[in-house]
Image (cartoon, rainbow, N blue to C red; front, side, top):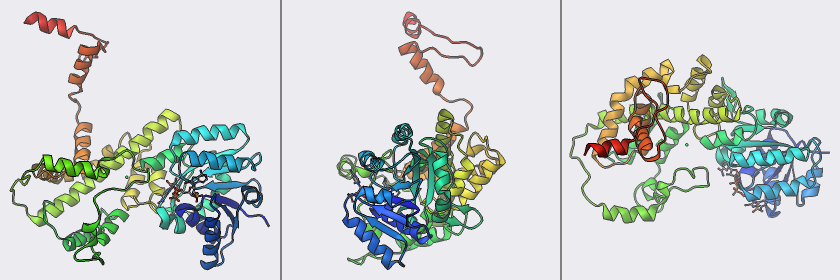
Length: 439
Ligand code: NBP
């Protein structure tokens, strides 16, 4: 008998997603360039409950084992491996068959491939998958974009395989046309002298309230783990160098460990401000500051998506995005419910910050937020997230920004012209001449 779907690329994500699909009752064919991974996956399917998963060592028999119209999910490394895998598969696929890229692909590559596939009569989806190994195996958040027809072929599978959140449903929805699925996924991440034990308690406490989220929850866990190789806590032994699988290429400073060590020797000194800090007050302030910063970062993330959606005519539904991120992925948080409601109240909301509920919450927390950022700055502690969020808020709420000076400079050096606050039109001034004629 033929299988319902195929999956090519059996590293961490592919293996686990294939087992998940088989477990939900959809017979699946699997293939990998290095065939030992095929055997490994077949073995796991046996051990994990005789799941309906069938392994193939060559692409032709793999493709031919799937019922028509055939759908193959690819989970290989983004970039050239995706093009190579498409070439391998497409040689055996027929009109109306479909390839789904489940990797973290740059959305423009997805759009290029979708066009190329269309010319061959094949359908294409770029589907962001969030949740890592655990999510892939037991329920990820899935962001399929591209051919709606292809989405409809596999919607029944995706609805069962994705994370299931009570009251808000399966964490999958058709995102939109083109590369929107990959784009949306991409947008998707010591002053107080607290001990690890205290930090564990603080985060566990925070996780009971408005900050309830996967990242706050796992942070509490991390502060509780002792090092089994020696004294103390494991978190203090982890090298402060952030790893990267490409998802966070936009933010790189934490990766530059060697450069930072060298710079720390050049900028040595006592950065402590000597202020006395009330621990309980500080914890409460940081909680409020974190919440306010979080609202700002979601506001910015949603606006990046909204801007691209407008540019590309994708017509994305931001409330639906908040809903499907509630399970599976690392940003899952009770807070996302509130974001969904804000967009339900007003689908055309220009910015989350001006939703009446979020606006009030920011107002209530801004004094604490400013105290935390000032304390950090006075003590030379970098808080890039919190201070950038505060700067975003302070820029957004201003009716007039010092951008007038920048525009004046642009007109001075490049005759780029400027508009005026008091009359319509476009103006240019000979700033240099006037300034120098006065001397
Ligand atoms: P990797 O990103 O490590 O890719 C390994 C897979 O790519 C193997 O199946 C490998 O086959 C295959 N591959 C490579 Br590399 N070059 C190939 C080529 N030229 N032709 C055919 N196959 C090739 O796997 P992963 O960590 O499972 O991630 C898969 C995708 O999912 C990536 O896009 C990743 O960014 C994304 N993702 C990962 C996570 C996560 O937590 N790991 C979470 C969310 C999304 P081989 O066995 O023959 O070398």
